[in-house]
Length: 145
Image (cartoon, one colour):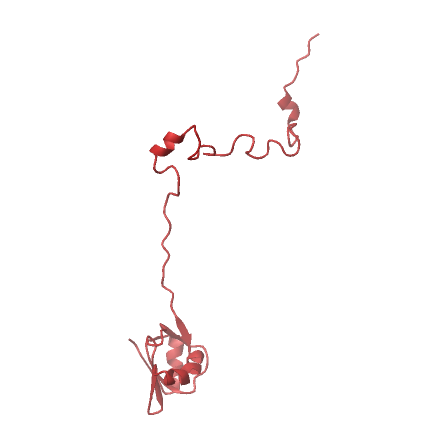
C-alpha cells in the first residue's frame, strides 16, 4: 500500500529555522543583498542603466526649511550685572542717575523680566510685559525701536 508523503515545508511549520540551523538564511547575505545591491557603479550587470539614469544614485525628495528666528534675549538681572562694564565700554550712557541702554548695540533682541532691578534704566528695544513693569516701577522707561 502506498502512503502519501507530506511535503517537508508542512512538517517544518512551527519550527523557527525550517531546518537551516541557528544562523543560515537569516540575513540577506546568501541572496546577494537587498534592493539594488549588486547593481553598483562597478557592477557588470546593470552598468549602462546606471549611466543613462542620472537619478539612480543619490538622495531624492525635499528637506524642510528650518526657521532661523532665534531670539537673543537677556534678563534684567544679567543686564544689571553687566551695566558697569557697558558704561566702561561706552555701550551704555549714564545721564542724571538714569542708565540708557540700546539693546541692539549690545547685540540683544529682547529684555526678559527675570530678576530684581535697583537702578533707573531707559531701555531702547523690545521688552516683555513683566520687564516693562519692573523697569517702570524702578522709575525707568522702555522705548520701542
